[in-house]
Amino acid sequence: MHLPHADRTRWFLALLLVLAVSAWGTAVEAGERRDVERVALARKLALKGAELREVDAGDARWLGAAAVRLHADAQTRDALADTLANDGLLDLNDVSRSDEVAMTSDGSFVVARPVNEKVHWWELPREHTKMDVLDEDVLDRKGSAVDEMAMSADGATVLTAEHYEGLTVWDLDDRAHPRKIAFLSRAESFDEIALSGDGTTALSAYDDLDGVIVEVWDFRRRSHPARRSTLKVAGDYLYGMAISADGKTAAAVGDHGALVWDLTDPAHPVELHANDQGAESVALSPDGRRAVFGTGRGADVWDLSDRTKPVRVATMGGDFHDVFAVAVARKGELALTADYRGRAVLWDLSEPSRPVRLAGLKTGGHAVHAVALSDDGRTAVMGSPWGGPRIWDLSGVDRDPLRSFCRRDGGAVPGEFWERYTDGQGSAYVDGDGDFQLCDGVLTR
Image (cartoon, rainbow, N blue to C red; front, side, top):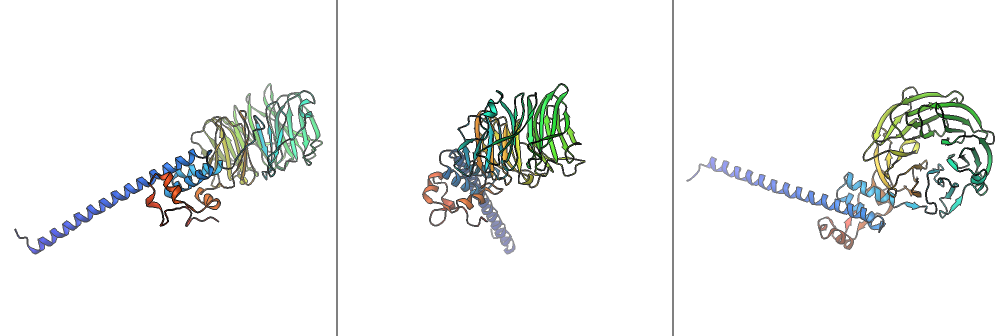
């Protein structure tokens, strides 16, 4: 049967359309298959990199970077970020436990307090050799144990609370020769103490029949501290306290919730905020305009800029349970949170209403009771009742882990290395020399 010319043309065009659609479908299917294979390979490399962190840190970094280069998503980015962060871990195992830790603002000096022991220090720029901050007299003077400790941002003043004895003020201007310069006799067991970064204002808390008493102290004359006021906190337990670097804002958390005070006039504190929501730890930005409260479900970020109306702006959640320890740095734009299950996460708070997970830090799998950050966020320290202080160099951590890797390592994955870890599945992604390029086009400045 012969079709008219017009019908033959329409038939031919229809055939071309069918073939084109079929070819397009085949191409799409092939492209989707390649995408699936690419994602699968990226996840495989990310997992292998995570497994190698404690065995071969170098290979772990390269595999993590390759995974992000292949397919950058939350899973591969987080894996590489965690590898880079934990590559800077240092254990100070000469102290078996550290219930409290503190760090100077420049990250060069760390103190830790194991329960019922003396306080120890480490000078980080040196060879991380342990030294005693306070000599044996601190513990043996009256047979007392150190309950709590606090330190100024420059490390020149350390405050220790001794069990049912009082508060000792230590001058560490000459760290080789610590001096006791004041003693405040108190017949209480202290719940918490805190010292402002500038060393001018201190808080001490102890149990009373009517609840918890918080005393506000003026330390401008360290040898003659003066008590300026007394605050009452409802409830039976105080879990944590914090004070801003300038001493003008204070916060406390206990079994009855959280409190924030304005201490601009320390003789007449003003309560700025109170809530009955459960909180277990607190940290303040240096200027007191931002607070991070650790809770049973994560950590809450509060904006305290308007002193008359504090506002909760975000919750850093996830698989968190009872955040026992929080710290802030970079003027409140960085936070470190740690919980009783041993999970610790570094957060970017430059947009406080949208916290960004930067990295997870390996804690050893035990509860973390104390954390501290240097002002620039490049050094972190953690303390746990089940292990000595752990210190991290976080200088290689930022929002873009691949860029961080390329600044430090850079280059390409050699063909032999690539073949070994991809089991022949990576041939489609190599260059003419068989290498997998990692950092071409990645801004590293």
